[in-house]
Image 1: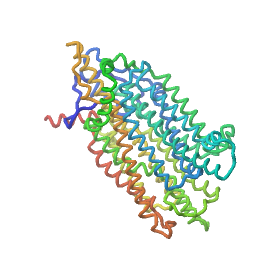
Image 2 (image 1 turned 90 degrees about the vertical axis):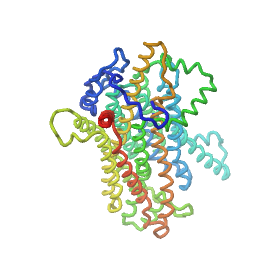
Image 3 (image 1 turned 30 degrees about the vertical axis):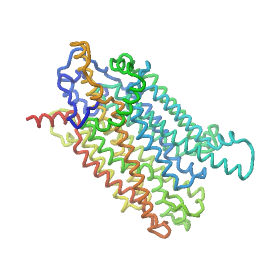
Image 4 (image 1 turned 180 degrees about the vertical axis):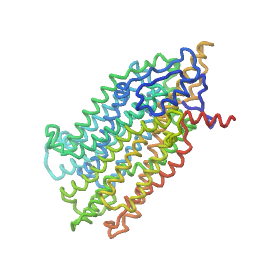
Length: 581
């Protein structure tokens, strides 16, 4: 995306385990760097303990650049996938089964990719091979998805008949759905590998800064992705295709290839074959490796440290709220746009644009101009959301960093730690979701969506920074112990089963993100069924999407409450000292 077995207390690095690594790089973008140095750098360390070098600003940019290309691809899928699939003749009742591919692939792929990359013995690195493999899958699925009908017609031949056209349409729909699933599985492969590459490449002191840069790159990908979807691309780039989807797929493929190439060419990984534990693992039989692999997947959730488990619990309830927002907010604004329009067709358009439409409806699709006006209103709101999120990704790390600087002055903002800012972001998002009950206009809802960009920025930064810091600290402490044991006895007594590697932990963390998306889908389906017919034939009186968002706000309040129990490394040390005293 190491842990211990059973419910025992998590391993806490001793003073002698902490690395003596001080850095002042990127002072304006390193949250809590001074306090981390005070807690980690001032500790006495073991001579010659392995540690990662300090990293430059340029290194941080190329390390996280792959996330910008990946996010651009994701916005193309989420912003344009539903209307494209509908244009292929796929009925709306099947959409929920199609879009469950995202959380399903997250639940399955990221823990598996984490385990496979952790145990990889390829000489050119543990993470980059999976990033490249995922990129091949994404580009293949995008290009086939954009030209699905052309691919099917090429295979089916040039016969022309009603029966032939029916078969072509059916085959086109099946191929498009398959490509959506392949796309989601490939995206999660890149996501898992790129996140663990960040953990592997920077020290504990710079984990927060690296993840902040990752959040900025995701914000940049969001902005350009939604901006591209808002533009009339076939008009400006006709050589790439004559439809919006074709041009977007071509651009997304090129952007992803470019960003992946830069990251993989610039970031050098250590050779896994040089690690003692990898040599020991290769001595096992293939059957034993498969059995151990399956066992670790099944047990990894129960073996993560308590400090990381608390972050995962927060993510679980937070994503019950975030998933319907990201998936339905554009449609929600489009529905408001149609409801508030003064045309006689407004109720019909409202029903047709919504995802709560009945399977038996015979309402014709809306005129193209009205459809574009409504969807552009939703895309414009998401563009503002992405811009606010990007701005927050730049400013919030500076504010949070200042909150931990030891100046000797009691300033009110010193209480704004990363964890507390994360808690406030949940409350802000929940408040915006509850406000949809009173805010009924397009512009008012657009403002609410834009404000949520602040919460989204912290969602992309805080949990990964908190988890990455813990993983990196534990990894360095483990390396110190291994060096001590190897120096004193020539052997290592560390049981690999006692701790999970970074890829496994981040994979489990992603499971806590993906699983609530499935739950959120089921909740939304139930609300659509219950509330969709509250008005005449489920039309103008239908506020089911609004209630889906509000229920998500309730879940986010639970996430805010759980986040009060989250502790970073310094706060955990203070808690331990208080308990000892």
